[in-house]
Length: 284
Image (cartoon, rainbow, N blue to C red; front, side, top):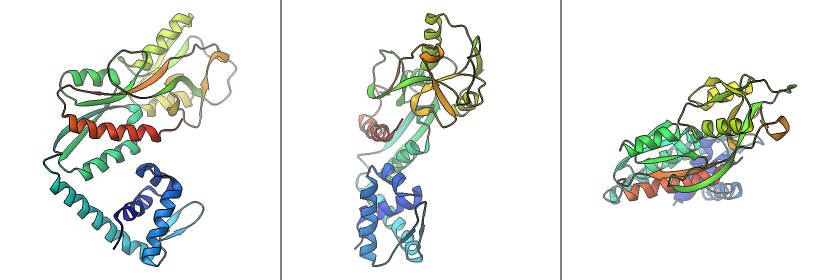
């Protein structure tokens, strides 16, 4: 008899392409994931993966078991959904800011949809201020995003430094007026950056306005413009500027979860647990 937990770990390792990323998905340490795979191979009596320092491939027996594992887990989810259908059913409209629109969070939401087929999840990506307006208009049930120095009520998740990001290529001096890459209003990072520069008496201009982190990163990496962003978004090819370059400090980005008063409290609780787990796995 196969242990469902071990099968779930086996599938996650293959889908995520590694033990570390599977651990993030399942909220397990890498050693725990390795232990699960070792126990499963002991049950089968055959190796399931051929491992190298950089990758792992399914053995022929691993490929055979993978087909069964997916079927067993799917049947388990179907059985759970059938017996808990009345407890979890409904539409959940989630608004997420750009920082959250990544594969990790979407996989978490996909796992929820698989575990509770009665829940229909739709996601809208946007700027926190705009998403909160949509929630107040009754078009979203939950919003997950960041604010700066705001009293807007919401469940506090975590905080990150807000920083000035620019190309990692060395430069002699910053341009004047300071070229900025910004999201459109109402964006908390935009407001914080413009306020701090005005207080410091630093001239600026909006060199690029965009609605995605891909464009923001491109502007900063190329040296075309300086972008205010959460520290976790500073990727290779970018460097953090600060007082050494004469720039003022920025406030922290405060990540929060907001829910509409009329939203189903059970569904909100499910999504809250997902976001809290996702936040715990973030690194910067």
